[in-house]
Image (cartoon, rainbow, N blue to C red; front, side, top):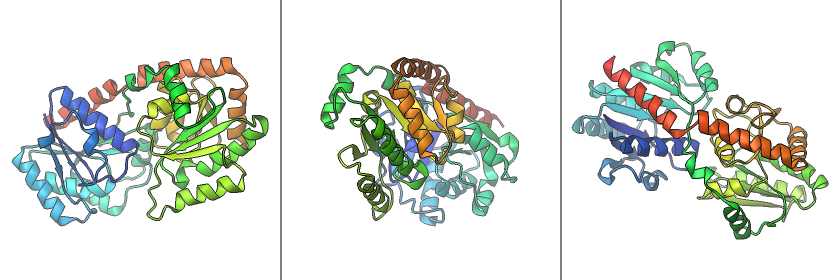
Length: 369
């Protein structure tokens, strides 16, 4: 099949990891994979499996970028693209226009977030062949929209390249801690995600303050980019760190390229999100055999069975978050049990191979319709 992946993303995140893994895997399976991205896209360097001649850039400024829409439509026609797969809401109208101008191509979108679609999307998605939801929670949100036929919605849970995370050793754990100057024999608790209010970093820090009362030598790491233009989100976190007297105990390290090493360096991974459509970082931490404490968002609740493959706590409750982490830090056997069960679950149900096969099946189905 001739498949084009479309994304105007400007910063790395779970959706971008999903697209890169999917595109590279499809190319490895023999498909002719193309990608249309912004010139400054973080994905350009992640598509090692895609032929460079098939990676093109367009401005992709917004949903009403008529110039990009026309150029995209021309590219789809010239290369006889069969599947146009869009991943961001602002790209849906451009992808819809491209497939409308090329009746031989089919429009697929993946919905990575829980935010509702607006009226413009209802119009532009009239030609959509399938909407892929990354979780049942996202599918439920799509069902409430009303204008999307139920039969066009398919759930394909995110998948991860498990081997990227399972091969880490004690050396990787120690090396990461030395690199970032954490105590090699200390307790390390971390979280990974974009620096935004939805990810619950303030709750993570308030929980850290409580945890330090029980474990004064415990240390904490926050990894993620601040997408706000003026850096106000990170500045707010730094102010809270100072207010809670956590300076020296918390490191905000920004983006980390080798997340596998970070996960294996942790004693407990924490997701304090207020909303999570799936929870890619949660799945990655579990694949790394790191025990997880997460807020009971829709996405996290689909991955974690409480007290069996991880621990779930109420949203926005820093005290409950702290209590769950303290319980794990004091019970090494429980940490090992949850870590082993979590890794097994990810290997069995959330592998990249499974996700690619299910997506490939959707592509074939819509080309037959």
